[in-house]
Image 1 (cartoon, rainbow, N blue to C red):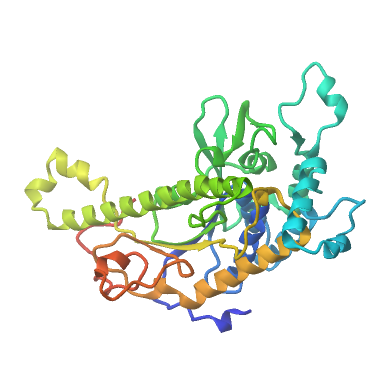
Image 2 (image 1 turned 180 degrees about the vertical axis):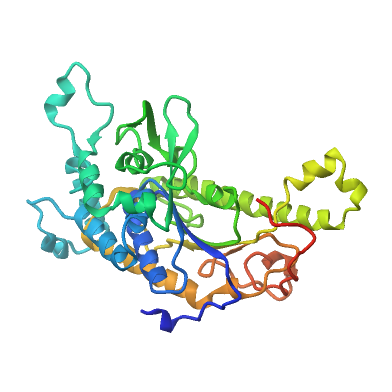
Length: 407
């Protein structure tokens, strides 16, 4: 696929582009496929943000030249899906059913870890005076990151990188942002240090765990960060909200995991969209206030919450056609990785082919969300308001000149 196969990006559509990547372990190869499609389009992001496995993918993207990013992502995923030496890759083809293959893959990860990523501690470590505080050692991940990511490029390049983690001592969420600090491998590892599997990572005297403990998507950070810019954000999620009622205990565990992580993401997305609508309408209200009201303490307070920017959020969500099992986020078989990568690429291409964000922005909205593959057809008898954030709307209002752009 090349960008020639996709609708051209209109010159008038001049929003900045961001890519935000959710946590999800082995499901992250779906994100790599999405990026492969974006890299061949007119929507190369200038800002990538991620949590957990999303932080690793984001670091590889930001830490390489554009022509090397997909290659380095592929190298990472091929490295971490290399099977143990006693289980050569060709044996995957002898496992007849996908469910059995996934069971083998997840069992291998639990027992032996994953190449270039994590591995079990040596047995004697548990007999030491200070035994491990995690089941696995992630020293291999640091080596992998150093081999695939140019951290000097991240800290001096033209693509911004932000990754989220949780301070173990305070419980507060923290973002490590290349626009504010120098990013090191430890910052990426901290974002993916999910307990009790992985130990906390120490950074400047503080210890950090996986950001997914608090929020599994960096969307709010990217859209609320000051100074704001009008932006198209591709939000790539690997846990989907909708699913069948479970009929087995294994299905219950998988469904619970999907709901737990997707609900946080949906809540964050809804909050971001609603808050930006409020900011946008405060700006409109301000333009219509008489000078006497603008000059009051209340008027000045209101002004600080207004915003002239508009946001488009394109959701690309992993929705496999068959059950992936309760261990899907640590099932690293090569075949499964390639299937997820291919679906991510296909879903991104479908979203880019539709490009609904190119439709004019309604005057009353500050933010729109689009889920091209997940939005149901709206019956003609339903009110138009029901589809307002997922369907094309009215014309763009003329630029405002009564108020200077601000954060």
